[in-house]
Image (cartoon, rainbow over all chains, first blue to last red; front, side):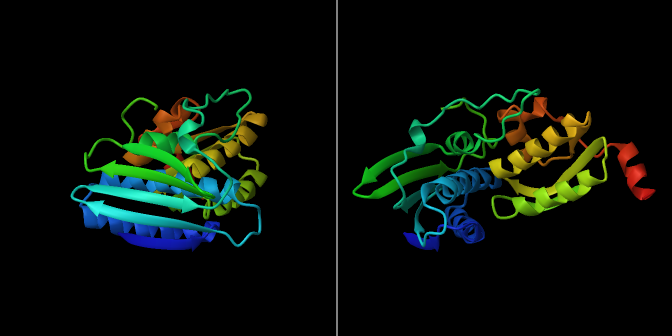
Length: 145
Length: 101
């Protein structure tokens, strides 16, 4: 298992992407699978950065990657307020062309990208698990979950 | 307008700033060449939506051209491919317009 600990800031997103890229390479995932893992992780980390912690705090996000043959399990831990991404809106927000509401896609994309997404709250920590398996399926080709 | 690289929460403000600058010139039609974008998350989609909204307020349109398969898939699953006009390639008339400056 490899671990990355970064400040919960936008500047950390590139470091997170590199970390995910190394796990993907070690697991031998395809390009499509790699994109799904990158997108799911990016959306969940972005959500913590944007909504999880008070602005200006010195908080952190931890990522733990466990690589198996053709599979990556990524555990994201943070100390933000309790938030279960698996219990949020499941439907893709509709966009009214006359009154385009911006936002609301991130968690849906995360859920649709991961082969499995689970959550638990342990003490004061959010623990979100993303699993992506090698399948070479299109980025997101299954029903919203 | 051509966009390249990765669009996420970190880079999206630069794209937003480019749109703001571009829209100051008052174009009615903007076509974004996304062939060079190798990663785009929901933040990027929100920037595109925001720009489209501003253009529509003045009767204009924002179109997306040549997105890579992964980005096109995001447009599809979010339903944004029905909000934007999506071209498989950059429209020829735009290439001519661009070469003419």
